[in-house]
Length: 286
Ligand SMILES: NC(=O)c1ccc[n+]([C@@H]2O[C@H](COP(=O)([O-])OP(=O)(O)OC[C@H]3O[C@@H](n4cnc5c(N)ncnc54)[C@H](OP(=O)(O)O)[C@@H]3O)[C@@H](O)[C@H]2O)c1
Image (cartoon, rainbow, N blue to C red; front, side, top):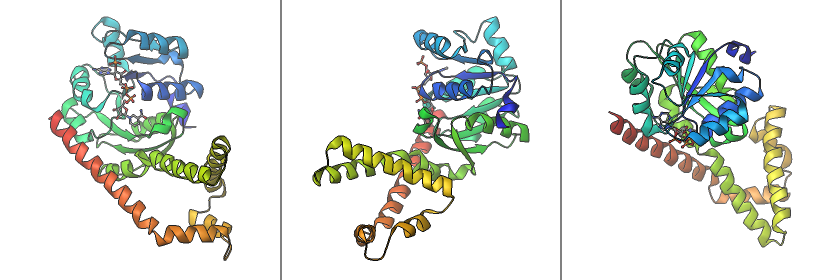
């Protein structure tokens, strides 16, 4: 249903890197929008544009200043900002005054909506999203916030696009740093846990490949159990923890080491760092 709103819409991606490719892949694989209604451009890497054109059938633009470039800028329903945060102000300056009335959807970390609205001027509909690295396999946990001029249709459009990358959660913008601490950095916390489990498994004598298979499937299976049963983590843990059994013995060690407090500190520190970086980013862009 989300995808139908995209039919017939023109999407212009400013940036052709990894996140742009994930979005193009998600949109084209789901047949959400015809590939020839997706336009992509970048700063200078011609080879990259050629690759995206050959692989996904999207259209590429080498120049936003020629007749075709201006027509696409004026007519695009969605302008997707997919360049690095420090390039965003320049990109916005470039499109200001030429764009029609699109939804401007940014995935750039740390760039506030207010800054984008200010650079673009007038009542532009700005959406700020924070996907995570799992968007590369279309399994992102994405958070999204809306600018003050967004209509319900703009929100639907943005959510339809972002849902091609994985799940979408709407949050107030002031919570974006918390989101970064939880789901932005989140994949790395699980990778770190896997590293620790791998090391422990090998110490106990398991061959590395066997350990990897067991741990990976355990992680995947636990996630799937949570998703498919709808039960919360505490309940699922209770179900596998019999009194005086092996799991309880292991969990006791976590408790003695104050594991939950540690995780709280980890996430709070990552959120704080996101705030620091955002402040730096915004002052550079001013
Ligand atoms: N990758 C992720 O998993 C992820 C997750 C969350 C958020 N993000 C956000 O997504 C954004 C892009 O990340 P990425 O990993 O895809 O970066 P990337 O692979 O480095 O790609 C950046 C792209 O921006 C282009 N670009 C630079 N200046 C431009 C300009 N003036 N006009 C048009 N295009 C321009 C670059 O073109 P050239 O190659 O020609 O220089 C390149 O295609 C970042 O803001 C990041 O915060 C990424």
